[in-house]
Image (cartoon, rainbow over all chains, first blue to last red; front, side):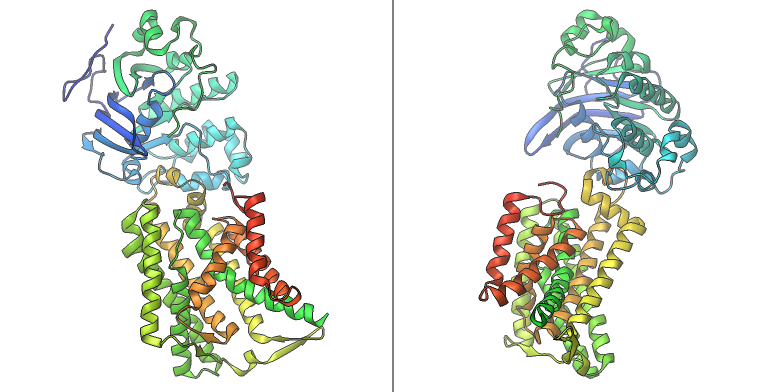
Length: 268
Length: 291
């Protein structure tokens, strides 16, 4: 078991070899005067998928939003060694951060094509070949208003918007939320392919998806990061997953607390 | 019959002027969540500078009138862009302060106009054709109504084309829906902020010149008086909706005209009642996305 409390510049135990692409230290964040992230340290490995886990409401979504500057935050957020914490959101994103938000957040009044065109970042390639290869449906439905798409199709738009550009890191927040099992597999397959292009920080409740994709895991409790280590080791430790996630990971299912595991209570 | 026709054209003409003010208000609120209480100032400034230019070039000539429209639009655009850059943008995301600063600017600018042009109304006349009437279905409709309707229609078409066909239009539409997500795609939404203010300023400046012909005068309070009705229009139409602003402009202006004529001058009251009814039954307005 590798449970650690990293401080300052001490490398996080269990993190992979090579400098992390995204390095977060002492991150705290607040929404409307209320502290939603207390103290988070995490490293996103330069390759593969790093999972950000924890029960509902512990601050996973808030952590992602704080990294992006979508909510007020302090601490250190370094992308490839450069501190981002004082930059506005659009400049952080322009440095190569792709974001797939919790509730897809497609622009419902815009067409699928316009949603993608809007996501084209200056100074980046626009990888329509990759996007339309992964989601041929989006090409067929290009002229359709994104608001009229199904949940699964909207998730494709949301993923496609992030994958369209060259990214140093992808922040993907609960991409399988509310999707049918077949679509969960589809999203999982897409993320596996995306992880070959850019490293991913993934918030995910479905532990089977985590098991399939993630090499590393960071676990939050009450706005604090309390565990860092290889994902497989963490998921194999029944007592630890029970304590930190309230779930028996061996079953590979959803967390047992909070019903479906998606209460939306984390929304900022 | 002739009375109804006259009220219709007069109502639509007034609706055109409301739309020129309300469209900018609605776009600005939709994207930035700022209620711009200085918007009437853009209108008054456009009207005054248009008046100055027209009277120098010859108020009764079409050249003078065209120049007044051009200068009115330009004055509105420049003043609106400066307002956004110098005052509103510094208070990014601080909505109460943003509203307060526009209220202050509104009061200060009216005082400034008082100082420059005096508090008395300046009476306006345009090309002779505009003060004549056209005979339609038994009614003698003043020609300036047609000009107001034509200009407002062109502005509406221009705005729709801009919003639908250009990248910045796309950013504005997306931003009205979900501004945080626009920034999370790496877009500096502040450029769009300046742009909606500028567009709102152009429309209001044109509205100022047309309103001064419609009412026959320009005064420092012209803009802020129209602003009250434009706010009502914006709320009824749904904050952030351009189509809503267009529909509600006509609705409010026609109701006002007809109630004034048939219900003993109760036009303003009727508009407030309509506002109350809409707020009670559809709190987000006729075409508003959400409450």
